[in-house]
Length: 106
Image 1 (cartoon, rainbow, N blue to C red):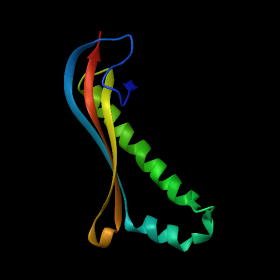
Image 2 (image 1 turned 60 degrees about the horizontal axis):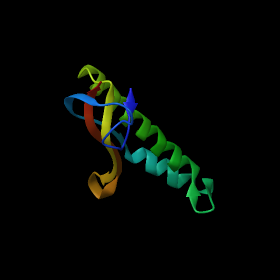
Image 3 (image 1 turned 90 degrees about the vertical axis):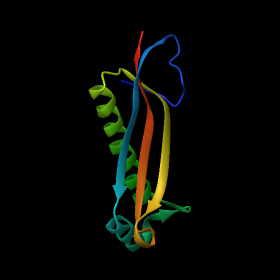
Image 4 (image 1 turned 45 degrees about the horizontal axis):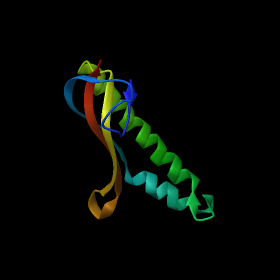
């Protein structure tokens, strides 16, 4: 499955649009508690544990996006957008969402 932020796939034509597809992953409050408890992990202003959690959430969101596109009969997702949102009471959770257009390529 080709997944791209561009609106085209070089050398290929869009044969059919199969609809908008999405994927989401939410990091719960326990992730932030664990991260702040392990503040010693921060080196040079970066938290390896926090980055690892966000990376895992992003991978889950992309996996859901790809699965939804496959169910729609697509072989690519174009125009992909990645968003990060703080949600929940007092901003206790982080949501990673990805969306794009599922297409069949010629």
